[in-house]
Length: 382
Ligand SMILES: NC(=O)c1ccc[n+]([C@@H]2O[C@H](COP(=O)([O-])OP(=O)(O)OC[C@H]3O[C@@H](n4cnc5c(N)ncnc54)[C@H](O)[C@@H]3O)[C@@H](O)[C@H]2O)c1
Image (cartoon, rainbow, N blue to C red; front, side, top):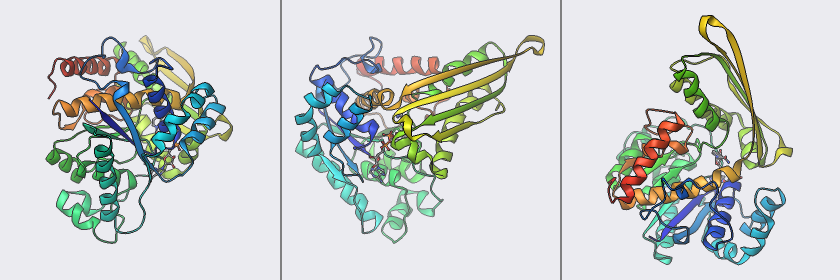
């Protein structure tokens, strides 16, 4: 099943690590550590193989992929030997990277993106293209009447307004080109009534939002534990220190607010109440792509006895995120092949703020994912 993986933000850290990783897996230069679709419970014939994946994408930046891979190697995110061994393959992927369209109305730009997606599919004779948003986090957009339904949206896009934020314009173009869409960021993406209606009309599946790779991953394991033991969480405070392009973006108040909202949702929805405390994200340039999260939890047990726990997470964000991008592309491609339409709550396991998922518990989400993969491999799940 030849599958295009079209990365919005293709020259970013997560995208470059995903491309290098996908090419290295195809060439047998690395193993699948971190790719959950290679676990025995999920592996199977419905998923495209790593060799089936063909990469392309958009970015506003122009730094060559080989340079981005070298920079990530120098930062310790990926092995330098892979950046060197894959130079020719990365140069070949470069041919399928496009600048983000500028000028004209948003309808013109969406048409240009959709045409590039269609050309990519035709050029490589792909069965389908999954569009994955890994571009910089953007602030929540102002409400616009065009967000309500497809006809209002089409009319508004042809006018002079910036109706959609970039993530949603890519999502719109993806849907218009018949491509499933995955949002790995907290940005709006396909989460507008007009776009959800369009995806349904076009018979497309979609998934999101915001990859769960660090502090929130740990929270989604610990919070159910407190709930299941009927312990009262009084406060949960987290401090995240990160550098890299994502850290720089999140230093902007609007993007920071979108990310913090996404991170906090897991507690209220798992515990049934919101404990005191909050999550902070601070930019520390020197940390590069490595992130430190420190969480302090205070809780009460039987007879009100107060207790506390702390954890510290030191993660390499791009190395944690990139294999999940490959997993999501493979699973979403299989869901599309099986005829699935609309949101894919079965992929909640991967996200901080999953669409339509009743639970944030990692173990419950895992079981749902395993069942979904079994159905896909058995020829069902449509
Ligand atoms: N790394 C993780 O663990 C993780 C987890 C969850 C979510 N995310 C999200 O993934 C995204 C990417 O993270 P990153 O570390 O790769 O960031 P990054 O800053 O390295 O990469 C973002 C890329 O998007 C590009 N971009 C910006 N605006 C664009 C536009 N309009 N069109 C096309 N490209 C555009 C930038 O030029 C850049 O190359 C972020 O939104 C981040 O919040 C990352």
